[in-house]
Length: 433
Image (tube, rainbow, N blue to C red; front, side, top):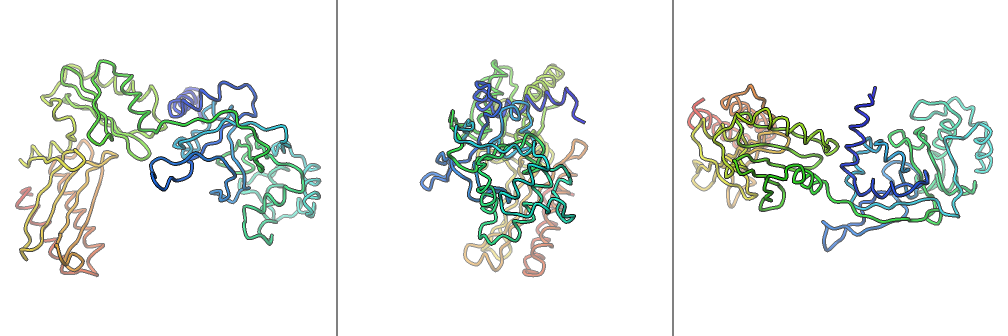
């Protein structure tokens, strides 16, 4: 059950993710005004910057009608788009409404009499409404759901090369060019409220806009929430550091699907992952509460260590192994060893990955015959607060060993044997375990 408090959190979260869309929709009173979200068309010259495009989706993800899909304003503003996570990452949006040429079929209001007439208009047998084999994937049995189930059944036997086009062929004879589902999940259960424009002439475009990427939204929110901290972007613009004059640092790390927040400068540092849907004042307040509770429990970690993962730093201190800077500017444990054949190099790496995970990697590289004697094996896991540096090293090395045996044992038995010997060497000689 969604409580009123939880509903407010969902609503606020969506507003934080899509402020441009919320602002645009709130400028219109017509409940049929909606938003069409689009990723645009890939730009061949610059794949990072797609070209805006508004048109019929000729290949919908589901076997739904070909058309331009929109979510009504009330559905979006009430926070219900939170159930359709992929749309928050759409770069472009169009505010649209039915045009004067629109003939709207409200699927939610279909009675059995309406369904019979529609089937007759389509040239279909209205007795299909009573066919026991007809069903709707939601399990609902209202006249509207049964009607949609009849069309699903008929489409399976239609002689069309394009399954999605079959919908448009059926509705063409009815005269309707807009389908409206008020919230019954007739068209698709995961998008219960939507409008489909089967013809672009049935739609007017009121406004075109572009969303900021999620990383920019996260950065902006944390910069605005901590005005006394000095913002500093990483070299590759993929991380944000917020530094205070007294040596406290906040690290903001966006990643696909979410972002991580870490602090440096406390004995008990804050470290948590969030989904983009969690981007709201509650995430900010959670960090602020931690900072207030730990304001007198400061460590000797200074700003210059801002991009060192705390777990990685514990491993470095415990085993007296220096951290090195990787190509992307973060710190890692990186050891190189010459193999017994003198021509190959063995590389062992421990680094901090997103999602609070530690990343272990072992590889053997030969400049000329890598495919014969080389290997490259990974293992990552999420450590917990109770695990010591020794525990983490053991888990990581054992994981490398298991993956090595799993992926290489049959095709490269010699490489597997040598890799296991290397892992045993790392355990005993490097980490003393």
